[in-house]
Image: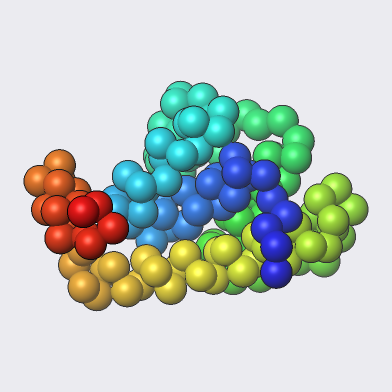
Length: 133
């Protein structure tokens, strides 16, 4: 399946999951991508606090769908229909898949007690990566 969501919309889904999963690692990895794609850092802070930020469409619907999925593990009929009407079925499917995938990542990182990467960690990884020779 080819990605349908623009980068900013995809990253907002991931950030919603990061907050729901309490995954600082996921948050730290994806916030810079979202900001580079156009997310206002103040909106990022609101997302991090669990506050619903003021967003324009289609980002508002993307955020709402992701929040419903992490909070309720489902979409009610009206939310589903509105999302399909506004975003299209392929984009709604992608939000569902991204939410489930990143929830699984969050679970795995929580169980493994994955710490935040440090600068030394990324330097060591580059030194060990044969692609950097």
